[in-house]
Amino acid sequence: MAHFDRTIPPGGEGKITLKVNTRGYQGKIRKRAKVYTNDPRRNVEVLSIKAFVKVPIYLSSKYVYLRGLAGRKITKTVRIRAEGNKLLKLEQSHFDLSKKVTYRIEEVEAGRIFKVHFTSIPGPAGTYQGVLKLKTNYPERPEITIRVMGKIRKGGKG
Image (cartoon, rainbow, N blue to C red; front, side):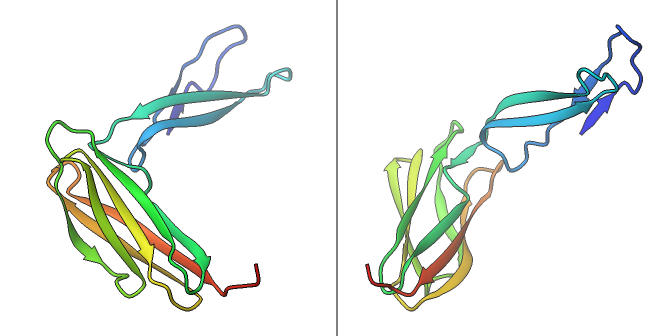
């Protein structure tokens, strides 16, 4: 969202205020805004904002893509890290792909770092999608949702 002075006299100064909604973002972000002017030599300027969004629980990815050949296992891992001061607890609240995918939560560092390993169940070619929802003990983020998508194609000659 931007607010700005509509008219600035030649040689004068103006003010531009940019607000960035960081909901859904984590870690380093960079946003840009174009400013159009009536100056024939510099009719477009680009403003750049860099920020680091702190979150109570960091996920290496909110999405898992399992792509590969039919009849083979495909494994992907999502890392979860507690950024808050208290130890993190995770428990399954919903998983709707139990016929297509298995998952296993590995606690790497007690209450701090976890790995969630997703493995496709070997089967025929096709596509699927679903979610794993994990309940946490962090009131700031009571639930983590990881979307899982699979695209399994027929095996070909290698």
